[in-house]
Length: 227
View 1 (cartoon, one colour):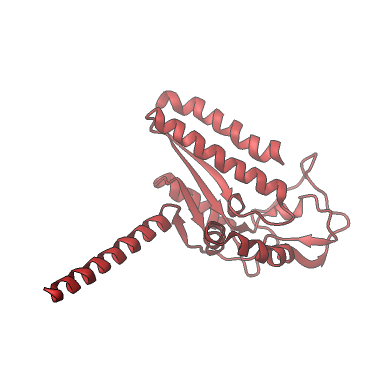
View 2 (cartoon, rainbow, N blue to C red):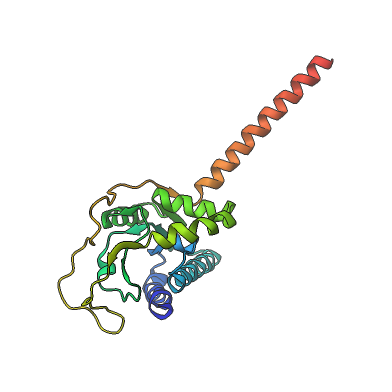
């Protein structure tokens, strides 16, 4: 998992930069996950790799900024997607597995990734569940630990027994023409709210300024009455 997921991104980024640096332009987009911020049970290797990608991306971005490069480096943090991966990933559990709901259609990811090509941001958070997970981890990490114990554990099981003849791609590719959508079309969402990672800070700053302004006005009013 680390070699494919993390080092795959590292080597892919290096290859892209070799072409982009001489031109001093381009956008590198890392397809991330809410799990880069908030880890869940049964996904330790994947969560660790995604968190490593986020750290790597932030570091390389600042290195490019130091060199005054015009290359943009962004990461799109995605929710659970209805892709075919659950049909070929090795499963050692008794039940068939699924992404933690809510699940989104792949077109949601495609639209989000396309949007940062047009307007790059440091990070784009896709889907209400992603936003909640990230902000929850920032402000209430211990509470989220307790929630994940049950919600994220049970949420990854379909309640159906796994297929006894399912092939997996752990060591060799699974042959066949695989569809763009996975088996979770029922209930999968086709639209998602997206926000830049900068937005919560801007909102908090705006609220802080508003509160400070109101406090100063109240103070001036009291001072005026005393005179």
